[in-house]
Length: 136
Length: 136
DNA sequence: TTAATCCTTATAGTTAACTCTAGGTCAAGT
DNA sequence: ACTTGACCTAGAGTTAACTATAAGGATTAA
Image (cartoon, rainbow over all chains, first blue to last red; front, side):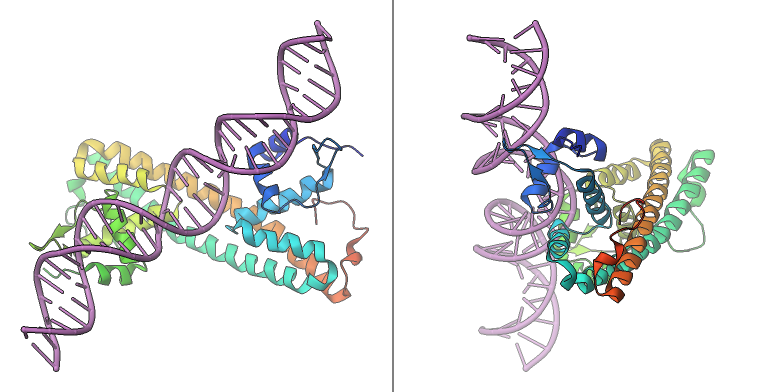
């Protein structure tokens, strides 16, 4: 079975080897096997697992919580409920984040047009007596 | 003109007084005036400015870059272009973040249904010979 | 007037997530 | 045989963004 070195995996996932070793030290990769020399041998499935880890990370989940999930995975079927609950919670969190960003977007777009107008006029004074909306 | 104390502002913005003082120290609030005693006196407009700061923060902008923006604001019309560019860049960044989260959401939802199925079956083995899609 | 409750500054400590260095091993190429 | 370069660990250092503490000043309430 083909395996990959840590630098190959780092390149593939756009991480550094430092980061991967750090994840390993934090217990995120108990599944990665080693050569007799100690060198990590990443299987295709290990890379897939790392992609899940990156996915969880991109939801803002801290590494310690991701480790819980990894531990649950090792524990087998008795933790299916926890893992399901965790992903449902992640789903809710990501939904909330998207909503938050959409709200942020509205304000940002308002600012874009505010500055566009000011830029065209050459001065911010053009907005001096705007009706009081949210805030410019 | 009515003013607000640091703790009132903290409550209003869901921040701590520590955080507000930290922002001040980092140069994010040069506009806040002081009483003779040194106590900060926040105006309504200061709170509005802090809301913009919070908005930029929620786009993932680091405090040092937000400070640049605040400095530009103090510099007046000569920095209109920079400020416009900054908000356009923020807009692009937020759009990208939303896209990223939507991709993340797909994987999370896939995992939710994966674990729902496993949970109903009582075992993850139910997925043992799933066709190789992305990754389960 | 005295106690409580604000406020202030300066500075130290914390936490997460890296990021790097030092010192060493190992396998391949010349 | 030896050099090069990729791998390893342990542990130190970095950075951002707080978060807290200490020591003291001002304002209010009894």
